[in-house]
Image (cartoon, rainbow over all chains, first blue to last red; front, side, top):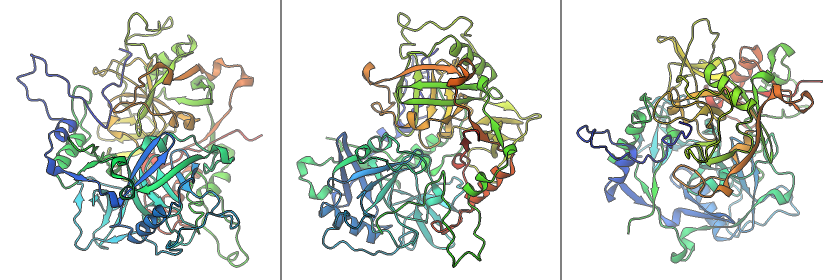
Length: 305
Length: 305
């Protein structure tokens, strides 16, 4: 009686073995059943040229960049990664229910700021939205308070304004964005943040979002929080050291972490999302009839042998 | 240029000093301006008889119980707290972007399970919803995908179905719930969970939610995650020890943490929420015209001297 909550994992549900008694009834397939049965064509392989590895003492955080949304920022980030800009840098901010932020903690101090690698641009346009012209959108039918429509573009959670013909990345858990000052075009991708709490969707269209964490979020989200209100650590020794941030394509192949992501235009993705939207099983009693964009898991797996 | 993100704290915004140039313009008040100017009557004092202190090595987590929603669970939790049930227990689960769970890690093992204090009920009704009859609801005007209406009852984030005359606590960040097995009435409040990620609103009306963390969330949310898929630690030594969970009213007055919460029926709460809904300042360029229930901060302060 006191065990509890064993069944409420959102990410995976282990299907209960069918007893002899209910073997005659067809149980509705769980999201996990559907994903496990997805054909190879439902999966896409993460592109090493578009993937960042953030190496921490505790392990590797894997980030997929979003050049379709923020081409200039992504290009600059690749230049900085190739130049080793973040090697030895830190996570210098951890604000509860909001973001961790990393880069050069001394960026504001001209005397101590780390030089930018050769070729890094020092000014970029704001990349808050993109045109939807010719872009495939995997729409969700669900209502969203922040935008007229939501769904996925290039596999990223996205909001869409069809009247304006614009789309933008949404600040869901795990989203990577480029910090800026007050000017919209003041980010260059050197100082980055990752969402670690309830989606701060009020940031949508206010900053250039540049990618998302696809593996290793738990290494960022469990970072001890810095003091309120903003989570910047008081003391340098409280920061978390980043050993390196490199492009996967620059890492020897034997040291890479090959990953596949479920395509958001696949039948398996649509069906598994529907199974979550109206989940009824031994544990869940009431179908929600809804899912929020930022509650939709984006399944990741090691490529099958 | 690389500083960045200094202005995007959701919890507090330090008003920029008005320069001579714009002193003639009236700046819109920020949420912080509004809350700072709120009269004493806009604040309510946390009731010690309804407050739990969870004592961890790193500090105190303060929880407000919700007897209006789950009277039987709350009564049982008070009995268990008075009987020292959780003293020396552990946080034995930490699942990324979902929940931490705590209580007796050996509850399933009859030989090792900790005995329940005298007077603890071993069966309770499911307390998933409450009647709205005669209940004051501080409604939000914002659309919600999970429920017909949302707002606050007794200061707690709440969903409402006016046709059914029912209301229920929503699984926002910081919500405390009672773990259960498959039977709806299988929770007694001994094993508890706290939401540490994107609001898993699909749990609404599926479990008995019993309160919420009002201070110290960062002590729970930064708990190292356990292994996937469900975050239960492999080894006992990975668990976080809970020194004690006691009712504030049972703790000597000199050791209490007096707190006040902004009343959700106050003008200051309504005005500050509106300021967040349509936030435009030096940093934010686009008013959202919306706020999600689980993005509304519930301000807490030490009582003024």
